[in-house]
Length: 187
Image 1 (cartoon, rainbow, N blue to C red):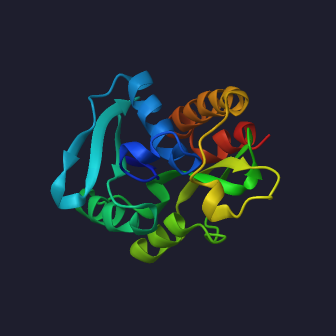
Image 2 (spheres, rainbow, N blue to C red; image 1 turned 60 degrees about the vertical axis):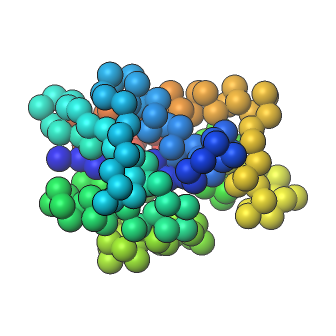
């Protein structure tokens, strides 16, 4: 069983912000895979959808907590479903990677990302996979303001490409393993 997590903030005011790219990608992945609409699970404070890829059960969640409390949703789901951290794929924004680029990594520190810090604390492990989506560029804006900015029309073109690439990488990760997906994705 695989758990895919799209980090972001709930609420319309955050919908198309850079911080919510993880939520957007998991929604687009759900649609592409033709999984059921997300449903809200109050006990886990999360939206959840599920389906299969090559007989593997795939659970997608989008925590309904703010970014810095994401672990409060992920850990109860992982425990209940008995999913080990190595089978958790977290999709999130990364201000240290330039816009239009992405990186798949495993077992790394949070590098100051509050959502990832919350997940590491809650799981008591950093041994999970992270799809780090670049939202950075010129750092003339502090990270805490950058993450709440919306994408410009020009930036949206770059984001569409990386969303497509990430969806393909998620699918390849589930079918062939993260190591194989990493080779293509990190180029």
